Amino acid sequence: MRDKEATRDKILRAAESIFSEKGYHGALVDEIAESSKTSKGAIYFHFPSKEEIFFSLMDRFADIVIHEIEGAITGERGALKKIEVELKLVLQTLVKRQKLAKLLLIHGHGLGAEFEKKRLEIYSRFAKLIESNLQDAVVEGSIPPLDVEIIAHAWLGAISELVIRWLYTGDPEPLKRTHPALTALFLRGIGAHAHLSQAQKSKRRSS
Image (cartoon, rainbow, N blue to C red; front, side):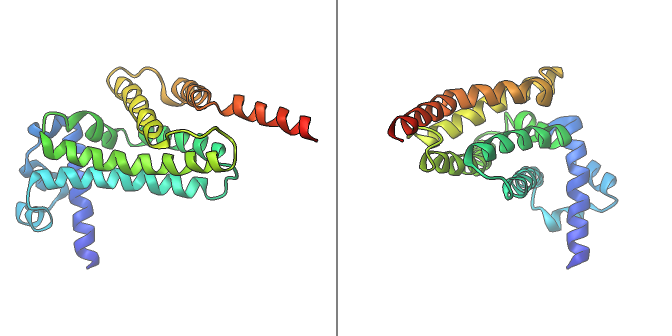
């Protein structure tokens, strides 16, 4: 079993590099086999098609990001702080794993309905994390009641657009410019600081 897992991982690592360099249509299974030092037979044993290799890479990217976020926010207190950490971790992971980010955000376009279905599935996984912490922020009184589902997807759309621009042009730099600007915009947009200030005033008046 370990040998099979190791072979599968070698194939995915090679495919990540080749897809990122040549795009989906330009990548050949023969090249993946050569780069991974396996055979086409071994590749098709693990993945029935080139499309399945590509989708497996997208799933692996989502698993990596979600695992790192969940680990990072475990020790944080307060929903808003967790949201800030989530945003920073997403951007940090995209910076560290540019090849996987390109696969998800750039190279998959034009693959049709199946790719869009997979992309929406992955976006929904990210959105659920954001929704959960936004809802916690509502419950703890850090923000006013909001449609957290819509907000989560809107935030993901904004992050995606800025990261795509960075992947193409190198600007704006995700951690130096994008992170502080998005954090300020997102928190202001959900009324975080204004709501907290109002709650503090009300508490003082009642005490």
